[in-house]
Length: 144
Image (cartoon, rainbow, N blue to C red; front, side, top):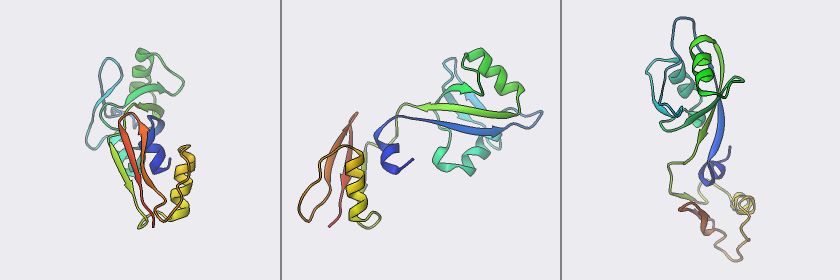
């Protein structure tokens, strides 16, 4: 996912976790399958370290484990199966304001981001500007 995609909307992603026999997956889950914590040195934490852009965070919600979508079946799968495809829903991205400037993104990149967001192109030397992307989130695009 691009930075803008991570910022603009809720995301679904899949963590592919290998749970060794005799270990738990390392996810503390509430009754709604929301992540309440990740156990240190667990398979879930190893996933987070190896895939930081897809790290499992507190308040992510487990929506599928392998082919199981029922909470009880997902919990059994997490406890009994070693190869796990854990699909998670992240309803809210932590950032409220994202500032992309010409130091890290070229003008053409800002135009691509603006186009991808469905926002009209801006004429003149300042190609970005502040864009309200909804949900209380603002995106500041700068390139001179």
